[in-house]
Length: 337
DNA sequence: CGCGTTTGACCTGCGC
DNA sequence: GCGCAGGTCAAACGCG
Image 1 (spheres, rainbow, N blue to C red):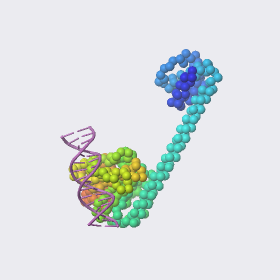
Image 2: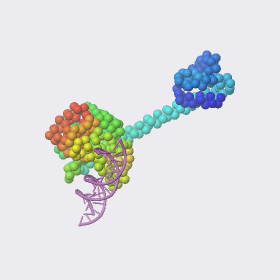
Image 3: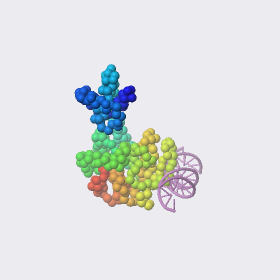
Image 4: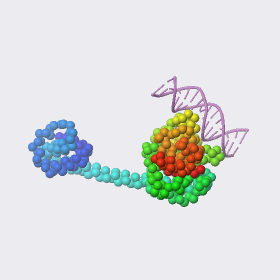
C-alpha cells in the first residue's frame, strides 16, 4: 500500500496541472467511478493523462476505503507539494526577470562607458582613427546614446574615421535606426547570437597598418566569421596567460589578411579577434554580412579587411553605403577616408 | 598522402 | 648596442 501512495506522489510531480484538474474532478464526481475499483489492481503503463488522473483517483479511493483515515492526508500532501512547486516556479520567474534587468542595466552601462571612452580617445588622439562598432544586442537606450555621441562628437570629417558618423549625413534618422537594427540582425546571424560586444579599429600612423578588433563571446577556439583560416603560429603574450593564435586567410592563395585570436584575460569566454589586411578575393556570403558591417566603416583601401569590394578606393562613399544597404547587408557605419 | 596544427627557432621593431 | 616582446617561419606531427 505504501508503494501505491509513493506512485501517486511521483505522478503528481510530473504532471502537476493535470493532477490539480484530476483532483478537482475527483472531488466533483468521484462517486460515479467507485464501482470500478477492481481496476486499481492493474499496474499498467499510463499513456493518457486523463486515464492517469482517473486511475490516480481510483487508487486514492481504494485506499480511502481501506484506510479511510488517510484520505485527507494524501490529498493534503499532494496539494501542499503543488503549492510549493507553483510558488517556487513563481519565485524563479521573478528571479529570472530581475536577473534580466540586471543584465540589461549592465549592458547599458557598458556601452555608455564605451562611448565615453571613445570620446576621450578621440579628444586625446585626434590623428588616431578609431572605430567602435556596437555588435549584437543593442537596446534602444544604446542607440540613443550612440546618436548623442555621434551628433556631439563634432569630428573633423577629413581626418576622423568615424564609426557611424559620416554615413549619417546620408540617411535620415529613421533610416539610421533601421540600419542599426539591420546591423544587429546581421551580426546576430553571423555569430549565431553569440556576438555580444564591441569592435574597435585603429590605424597605426607610423606603419599605416590597420586593424579591426572584435570582441565576441564565444566558447570555441575561434569564432566562425565565414572565412577560412589557417593557423600559422601561437604565442603567449606578456600580461595574458592565454596564448595568442595567429591565423591567415586561406580562401584565396596569397590573401594577405591575417587575424589574431586571444581570450580576454578578464573574461575567458570573450574572444578578442584582431583582423589585419585586405582580402584579395570575394568573401563567402556568411563573411560578407560581417564584412560589410565593419568594412563600410572602413572604406579606404587599407581598411577594408573584411570586404574586398571595399578595397577599391575609387568607389565613392555614397556608392559604398548604397552598396551595403542595397545588398541587404548590415553595413550602416559610415566610413571616411 | 594531403592538409591543418603545433612548436621551437628566427626575425624585427622598439625602448632604454 | 642590447634586451625584450611580438610576429613569422618551417619542420615535425597528427588526423582523416
